[in-house]
Each structure stands twice: as structure tokens, then as C-alpha cells.
Amino acid sequence: MDNTRLVLAQVPKNTSVASQNNLLPHLSHRKEVYLLPNVNNAEYVIVDLHPGQNAWDFYNQGLEGTKSILVQLVKSNSYKVVVSSGDVYLLKKF
Image 1 (cartoon, one colour):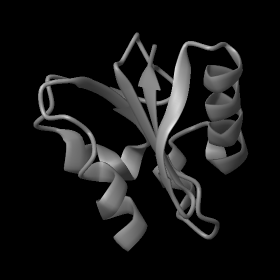
Image 2 (image 1 turned 90 degrees about the vertical axis):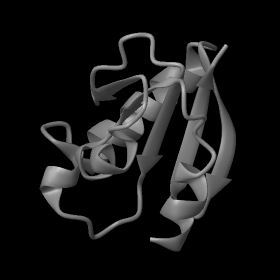
Image 3 (image 1 turned 45 degrees about the horizontal axis):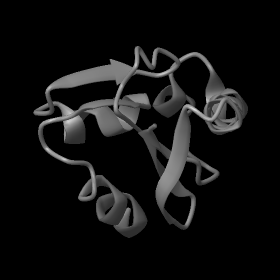
Image 4 (image 1 turned 30 degrees about the horizontal axis):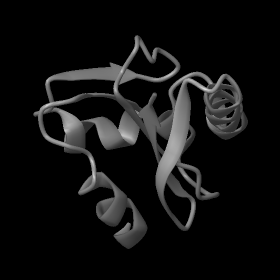
């Protein structure tokens, strides 16, 4: 959880963010919050890909589906990884 806290702290307060189910409570005070796989043009996307998490942390797409979303966002050149720590990634929309 230390890696997660470190990366969560990097999300600017007045921005929109998309994330997985278990991280949303930590982001609920942001301007707009979206549950992956819905990105909805969020300014930031944060995911925690460490293995062994509860399946519900990833809602209906699972760990592999969440990894796939991350890869697609980066490959589309719409988002870039701006912070990573361990298996936790913060992407910013460009």
C-alpha cells in the first residue's frame, strides 16, 4: 500500500481521474471520478497492478483486463506514464 499512497498523492486535487474499484474511495473528493474501464477523457488514470488482489478491485475486467487498458491508453499516445512505483502507475492525458 505504500507504493499506492505515494502515487495517489501525485494526483492533483482539481482534476478528473479514472481508476479501479478499490482506489476510488481515495479519489472521491476529486472533480470527477470514473470507474475503469470507463476513462471518459479523465485527465489522470491510476492503477495498482500488484498480483494477489481481490478480483473486485478490478470490477469486471480483472487484472489482465486492467493491464490491457493501461497498454491501450499508452499505445494510443493519449496518455503517458508520469509516475510509477512498484506495480502502481499514474497516467496523464496529453
